[in-house]
Length: 154
Length: 154
DNA sequence: AATGATAATGAAAATCATTATCATTAAGAG
DNA sequence: CTCTTAATGATAATGATTTTCATTATCATT
Image (cartoon, rainbow over all chains, first blue to last red; front, side, top):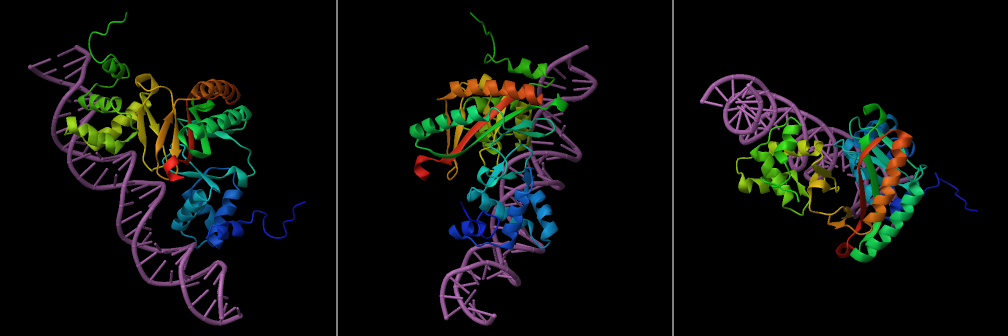
């Protein structure tokens, strides 16, 4: 049995310190927001949400922190074609299952699907292995998206 | 045997007229550039390249034309995380085979791979069918990208 | 707990890709 | 060849993201 005596069980402070970064209130506040939403929030949406608990935070800090989190592989940066980056916690830190996205080209609606994932994952692993060998690429991430029209927009 | 008596064989003019658009010099110049490159060019790169044959073209026209071409499904808009859209001819109009992309997170190098594609395509078709049914989505496109570190950046 | 080095922050200005505006030009139907 | 109007070029505007810089907060060390 694993004991987690203090904290939320993620060891955020240790993770930051281990990378040579400091553990700050704003970083905690941003991670809290990302942890408690199901949405793919933009930087500004995250900023607005964080402000409720931490009114003095600045937008630049949100951008800087998100970049840091992406670099630390704690957060995934997503592009749904709406001209702004969107963010979600990486699978390791999220309560969501492995999923990919279906994007409506007209209204921008996003559906996360978890079906058919097993086969996908299996194939992707095989592909990753093949690509790594052939191109000497160290692959650590992938993205699959389907684009089309949602029910309402057809 | 198929006879193509005039033009480059793509019937561009007819395609444009068929959609209610005019066939213009700048549109031809932009398609020419896209047809004769292997790169994933940004709007500005396309602009610079077109200018060599067509010095009076404006950047705004390039942007407008690219948007039109994307809407007509002649061109694919790609995002490699470098903060600017990049474009390539859709498979139907390209001499390239069906491929996906490998993106280096450090230097931005892009590798196009065509290996392992058959299995991918097969799986994607199955997935598309399943997703269409379940979510009533009309899927007309997909994207797969792998991210990691290229040989030089590891 | 106090100190000091310096990473992190907030506010505001700067950047830069993309879009909108508007007067002018040129497709192409008749 | 003429006329209608879509398309264009130049330029200003927009908006997301970055940078700058003076100030503040973290945390290893005392």
